[in-house]
Length: 280
Image 1 (cartoon, helix red, strand yellow):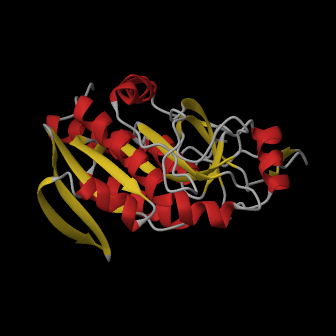
Image 2 (cartoon, rainbow, N blue to C red):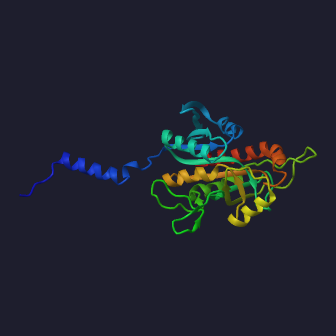
Image 3 (cartoon, rainbow, N blue to C red):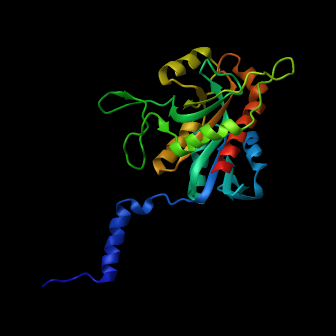
């Protein structure tokens, strides 16, 4: 006897298959852009641009919603370090479901051709302080995707559309020159490159370490949040882009340079991100 499933029974079975396959857990974005920064000053510069800002607290983390141009925006400060960055990114994605994430902030330069105030658009990011030994006793720098259980790439690629948009938009942004000891401003134009940014839970203030990061990763800049944000976005398939402005050269004078150049670097990075949002 050929028995056909009733429609309710069929839909019930289909829903079980759909859920167990993982399709039901796919990220479903909303028409809003997420902006993140590690420090209060970086985030404050973006918040000042928001129209009709509204504050929402999620599990103790403050998010500010508003508009920049025609774009709906949600902004948050991640705090310093990879765990804080990953936590805030995850809360933002889960609660607000932004269609893309932009990160603004400062970094130490490891590319000898760059100076404080210069901009690195991260075409890719990597963890420089992560490593493991595989079951075949082979060392790897690859993290493992908690969703797929597969290895992630060593370098997390930026979203190509956002990256190319940033490369075009930055040409129209007025960037501040580097302050000089005499009180003036350097007439050297601010250099903008698309390069590699590496992330680790350490403030690098060592010329040896800076050279090592350059040699091992071809790093142009080093910081403490970018790859964590990139990994979360990569695993959930959310487009992202990291923008870093150099506050120092990650050398023995890094702490001194940081104090001097941080305000300029933060403004340059924030202004680039704001211009990108307006161009979306």
